[in-house]
Length: 139
Image: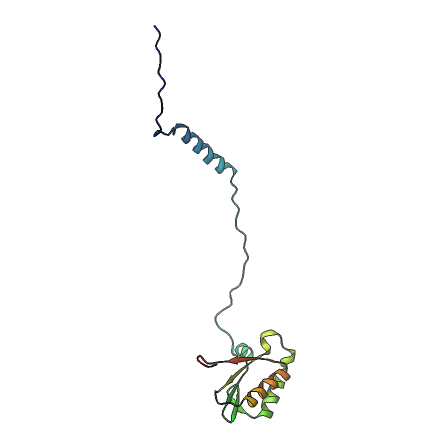
């Protein structure tokens, strides 16, 4: 007597997952064996301290020219046009590099254009670059 086995037919709803476990474990083992771990490379840097000496702060201070009604202020000192020309020449702006050439120019609203232009021309003739300070709301 012979026993016959019937094939179990899968329905459309059933998904064969028996071999899926084998494949996933094989993939995990494959990726573990073939992966290489590299140590990240970087560089060592020194972070500057938070304190500066007074001399260094004085050297890095950007010269500022303030134009107000009937007076010129250069680094908190009231000067004439001749004194300003001498102080700009003493800064040796034409021999400086990049940011050291910058001279800040701050003018009040009621300054005549001729005075403003004369100061800008003086800074440019001394070899500097003019940076204009403008208040919020001004044109």
